[in-house]
Length: 86
Image 1 (cartoon, rainbow, N blue to C red):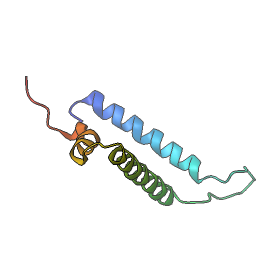
Image 2 (image 1 turned 90 degrees about the horizontal axis):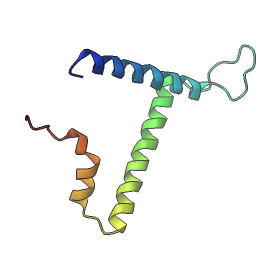
Image 3 (image 1 turned 60 degrees about the vertical axis):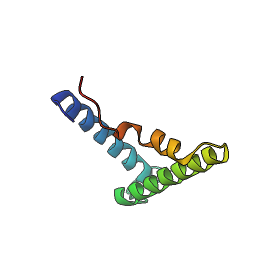
């Protein structure tokens, strides 16, 4: 986040993610006085676990197709590479 526009976009994404997590916590049937089924923290942990599982399965699939581990890591972490100044 290097400027005000990036900070605004990040803030919007945080609120959208929170809203989706909150929806994930609600019971399937809206009954009067019903409490959330899970907490936001539990929903975050479940989503993190699902993401890690998806990454592991993706890497396994790519390895089975003959791709080298170094290439898989380069793909997974491409956005984290430093940007060269022009």
